[in-house]
Image (tube, rainbow, N blue to C red; front, side, top):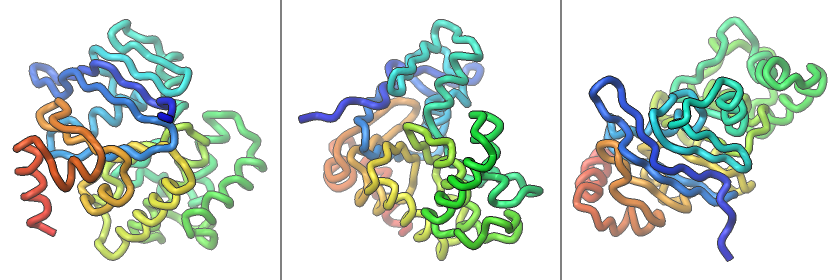
Length: 252
């Protein structure tokens, strides 16, 4: 029995001036599954991910998360974009924490000011999320007092605090010291095991093989190959996928 789709994307197009970054991308993500997106730099992965969260506004295409749908080709208004954005939580490459606020203050910012949750309740929930990412004792510290890996785990807790239906990760380990990568990937693996629906842009091929239910290889703004992790990563049918994986794996 197939799972219902939590995320559906149809015919997504995005250009920056004359440069076409996305050229009609489609995607179906069943609830409770992990989708990993791989591909070379400039292939459109991050632009696609940000379009799911309405941080980028494509010229054409439809994005549906659960019961919320936005047709970008129909010039959606800000309330519709805010409603779409509220369905997902984004974890960025570079943490994006407020340096002048404590870890706890960073986490409760969204729930209190964007969703109107009572500050006491938001604080209680924030402590639970910090416990989940292994940082219970860091609530009163500032981002500058944390390692890059710890800051990224705070970023995950901040995304969880919004209670989204979908979690989006944009190369969450790319800016980290190799010694801290494992801690972040461990948290993500736990979230997958808990049944979160996740879309992750990553260069961590071994992690994608281990955690992903489906893998998409993007190249020059199109999905050049998609399928199970075993099919795409171990026995790719597209020569361009094989070339990319050969270069990535040679560097490991």
